[in-house]
Length: 189
Image 1 (tube, one colour):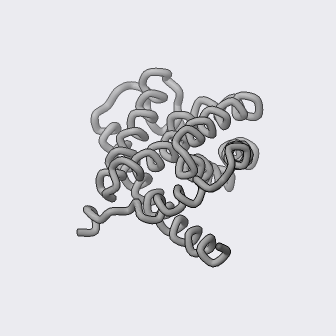
Image 2 (cartoon, rainbow, N blue to C red):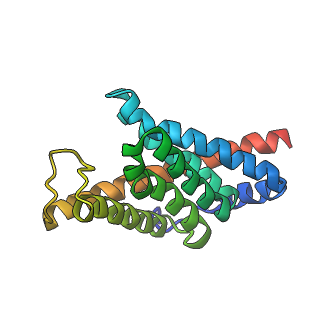
């Protein structure tokens, strides 16, 4: 029953809490999280080595903004992309199809799909589609020189396994983070 459990309780509670915020407060929160996502995404180029371990955390600000409100999540996604065009143009190719789409996908699916397996599968297909689009359509070596840009079902299978595990990790991290946030907010309210 682990895979069929419902995950959306904390996200709904946080969403209800953020409903009490004024429009301008939500807008400022979106801008701050977008700037944070752009900084985190660009660390891969700014700090070679350790930056590649930090850049996947650009998913979190997009996810949080999507929990605030789906339109604000989309705004954060677009604003982060535009900031990356100015800061790190190379990362602006990667963000919308990888870390950004994972944050947006998890946030959207928490409100609509609710069950763990559905959320993970939906998000993993979004990530698979994003990576394959970059790799096979744009011929952008998103996975480095190790993976060829010629279509291979074996490689697509490996990418899907990676996408599934990556999405699963992010769903679990978000669940833990939302529980901690709700407890923190519950104490302060």
